[in-house]
Length: 145
Image (cartoon, rainbow, N blue to C red; front, side, top):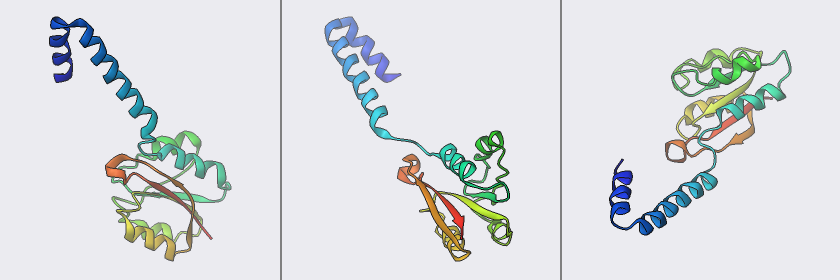
């Protein structure tokens, strides 16, 4: 709003300068959109699991308190339960022999969950970068070996 108010004030005084400023602001905005990259690739990670798993392989997600990944898993026909807030219920999935895939959100923050997954025989299959939360929006897809 302040940007718009300032722009209107400048436009009243010098319309040519206002056009130049508007062009600069629009250019900066377009450049940031073009270079920023993906915010957090939850959809892409779920799609990766859906396209690489066999029908008998189960999958689960570790990360947020809400199961936002379900918005993408359900339409793809993938049963992908969450692991509770920040992986509090991770052990139940680690003991499930059909759980072959894991989608780990915020691996830099959830280091204990990442270690538990690796100790249970999961290895990294794919990595999806993301800039949300100061660059911590990365997602790792792991598969049990």
